[in-house]
Image 1 (cartoon, rainbow, N blue to C red):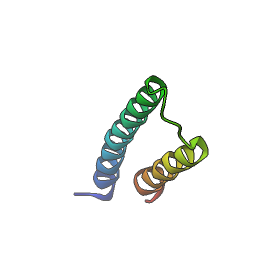
Image 2: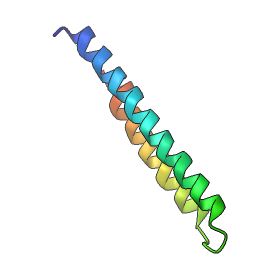
Image 3: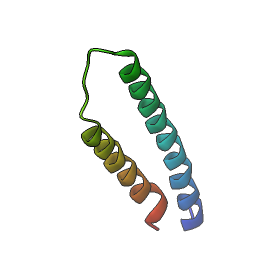
Image 4: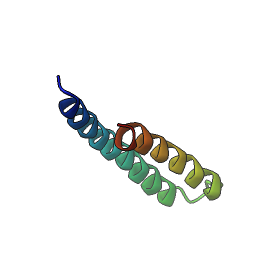
Length: 64
């Protein structure tokens, strides 16, 4: 495989993993809104999702 093919493959899997990640974020938010008695530390939740999203971005879209 050429480096261009490997880059395209990495971007393809990055898009797949980013979609799965956003799906899980959506499921969490939907469940959190419906759970009235559960209190979340929203800053920690947002920071965790941001860290995971940043790791995916750096691993699949930034590195050559």
